[in-house]
Image (tube, rainbow over all chains, first blue to last red; front, side):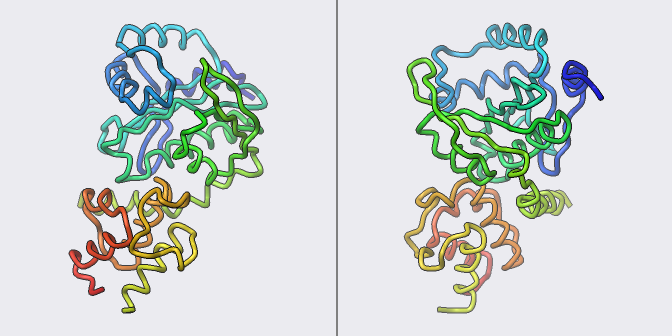
Length: 199
Length: 80
């Protein structure tokens, strides 16, 4: 059985492949793309981000990130290779992991199931590869879109907290309540659709 | 109501998991909890499968109400 450190190292080298999108381990050269996404007004609001992100702040974060175990940050790429968002699992322990920092480029978000598949891939990794029993996420109290999507995944409210003066809700999903197969039909349809479009 | 209109209503019922009575021309994206981004993907899956069409990206984004869905189906040659 691999340790948390070994699994972290492995998945920082190894992409997670999906049908419509892949989770590609974050690398220094992705900084500009992530900074662009993080500075979108809606993202800044919902991530309660005070200042402007820059490549320098992103590089500093990356430096610290590489020192930590149990933290995986991915660039989400579509099958054409375009960066369409990012996703993250962090605070991974033997019992639980948190998902968060998901951003989907609004240019792509309503034309394919990027958020859906990116989250499914991350949660499958947490439950199946890291063996956690619970996945947690926190979101701003008025982030109803994210709350609605995660309610579909089976997340249940588990508390609230104050983060830099803003109320956040905490949600938990237990392994027995995780049913990714419920979304297989949607993802398969969109995957096949992309294939037909490229014919 | 035409057969295709009934099929379209059923696409909304199956895709969004809502009651048929809610599917009126006034129903719009994000106006009910079930029509969120994931619901939208499920709805598009239903419409493309049932009517055997493939919507353009701009039409997927533009399909933001039942009324617009009907108009788009006409554009793709489906009699409503």
